[in-house]
Length: 127
Image (tube, rainbow, N blue to C red; front, side, top):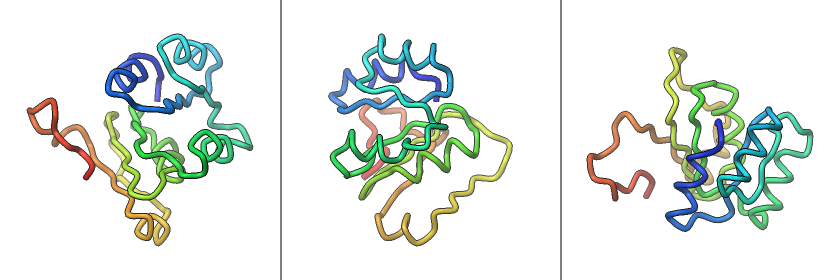
């Protein structure tokens, strides 16, 4: 995702830690200036370990994908924790696939998109 305003919105609703992910160093710096607690490079070999460390081993409760890029979706889904929810904000013309399989089922992970969101601003997208 391109971090920035999303991090600001997450902070307003009490999310913590806010972890921004972007391959561009300047985008990671911008995310930190918008309120992210941590900004990670998705290509870093220790990426998954960094997410686990930042969440005390839990994995993410929520991940937002605003790119629509299949590889981003896959990586975000892989670091979700128990009952974690991936919110798709970006639009893609490729089929939605999550290759994680049984792990995703076992951990009760969810995938939601914003095209079906309720008109209510307090809509409960995941659980």
